[in-house]
Image 1 (spheres, rainbow, N blue to C red):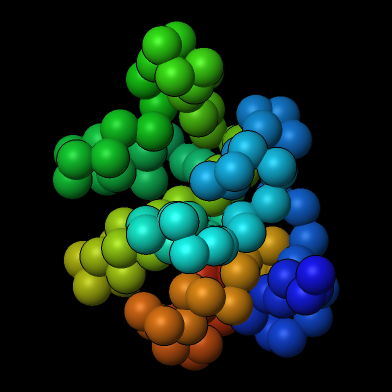
Image 2: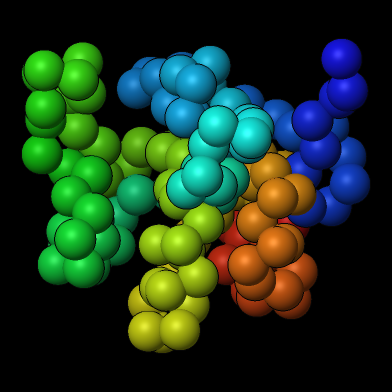
Amino acid sequence: MNEELNVLGTPLEPCSLKPITGFYRTGTCVVGNDNPGIHAVCIYATEEFLAYSKKTGNDLSTPMPQYDFVGVKPGESWCLSGARFAQSIKDGTPPKIFIHSTHEAILRLVSLDDVKKCAIDL
């Protein structure tokens, strides 16, 4: 099995275990072939970003018990989809992110410079 890497080329670090995040609910922003949304970006959720995401069609804050989803609260971390992250950069409202927990696959959609501008752990 290949080691998963972050955008800096070092081992991918966990994003969140509470709430448990990731497309595969492993706590890391691992990206696989069956993850078309490229849930690669470990964000630090703020009220402002959660409101932006909800307004643009990706409600991360409302619990959905039918999917065992408790909702993301301000101050928590979450693996965000690549498309939403790229759109937030374009809209000028990107979230703060944990770069060491952001999968290298996001570089298919945005530049490393853009990712670094959002990092709070560099």
